[in-house]
Every structure is written in C-alpha cells, then in structure tokens.
Length: 116
Image (cartoon, rainbow, N blue to C red; front, top):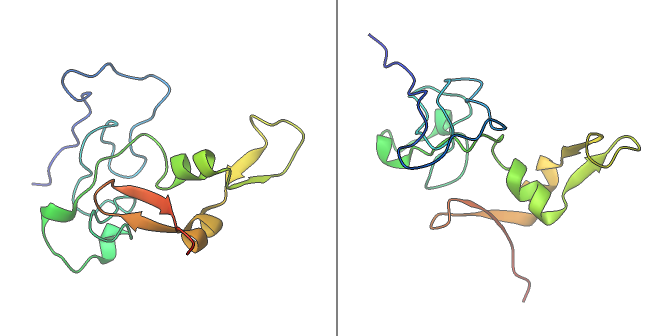
C-alpha cells in the first residue's frame, strides 16, 4: 500500500492559504515529498530526485508551496515578462537560474555564483 500524502500543515506553523499542496504528491508546504514525486529535489544535488542515485530518504526535500527554483528566481529578478502587468504577466526564468546559480546543500536552495 502506497503512503498517503501528509496534507496537514507542519506542527507549530500557521497554514498559509496562498500556498498550494504539491501538484504531484499532494503534500502540504513544509512536508517531505512522497517517494516517486516528480517535483521532489535531491537535497544533495538539487536536481530532480526521480533520477537520484542516492536511493534513500536522506536526500528528500520538503515542498515549499512554490515550484522548485521559483522563489530564487523572484528573489534574483530572473523573470520573463510577457505583458504589461508587473504582478501577473511574468514567469520564473528557470533556465537563467540554472545557468547563473548553484545548489547550496546547506541552505537547500539555489544561490548565485560568486565571481572571482
């Protein structure tokens, strides 16, 4: 029997109605993705966990309520604008994120590369 998604908010944290459950495995923000979730990232490499070679739950990550990399794109200004509305008419530029940033294992997020 497959595990059921944990749809309850993380204990001690208020539920944020603006954040959605994971569209693939249905867990609430703050919870670990279920095994086999296509959106889960490897905590070690930051790449899609479905192709991970670690083979253990040690590399599982939590669903944040946002698509992987979306928060970093917004923070770094990596967005593609396609209309006049600055709030609705943009999408994260994930290609630029992966070109200009690296996965930080300790922070569990993409960070800008430092130039020397």
